[in-house]
Length: 414
Image 1 (tube, rainbow, N blue to C red):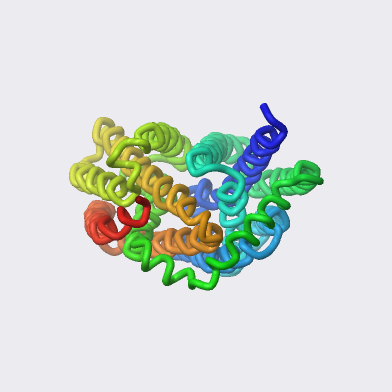
Image 2: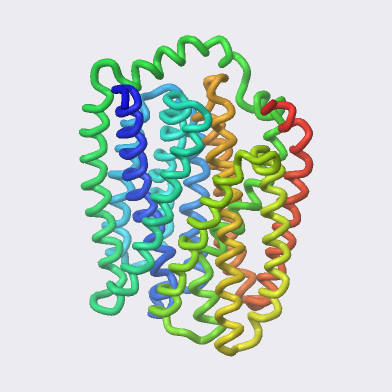
């Protein structure tokens, strides 16, 4: 292995570890939300507002991070994000007034946004598109493994200590990773570094930056895909955040079981994303817009029996609903891989990979923010069965947006 390839491998590993830690500190509230609701620490509505605050500020932060990520050294943005997120996790369980939880978790959302666009820039400008996609797959797997470990760890903490320890330990872990990351990345990029290569690349591509990011999105056909990304974010984070509560309230199960069964979500997501990566080279999925359309269609079909069986309280229906929810969420994670991981990499030659990545990821969390409060409101007023029916409409909208993007985006990637 050449020195350059060795450095690139280490950079991918460091980005994976950093993103692993960020996911652990991002999803702590979602992992213990059902326990906090069950203990009357918060109610469904406030829980929805806390989750929405994270997603709204994550989305806004993506735009800021995407802009800064093309202009500042990415490692410093990532370090700032990890440390700030860690502090939010340590402070969160100490707050007594449930409404003050909202701004703290909003700050965590903004901090989390400082991770992904810089990672996109680092990878897109260091690797070929094929290796960029592979690196994204590795980082995505790291995030899902983080989620699996969190959903196993959270019930353990709740059973033997309390939900508060989930936040405290996550914060300490994130601080440790942040310190290791900034030291290691500085050493790896010393001398003939990736940062120097990125600076040279930026100089070579500077003439392309006169075109605005939004015009680039329009000309490439990605603009309609932003609405598909919003729908994907609604479904992915809506199911991931609310499935434990849905399982607990619809089938009268305790919080520990509801959190533990949610481990199936990242497991299914890993399998789904791996399958999509394998077939990404095929004619259908190499075009991210047609791949997304297929995944929206499959998910819409799965939600039909889900909405019916959720009102039947027996073990068989409970297991089937859990599997249907997990597969639907997995399809949305695969859709996320295509639209958030692969699409921005197409813009490396324009010098706007971080900016485009930030805009696309911001749209994801517009959908996520809507889902957190929207699902809370619908579940309390309409019940869980009609809430799942509403998901079908969201998936169909995502499919229509994908269709509108196909023609122009196909021309762009060719």
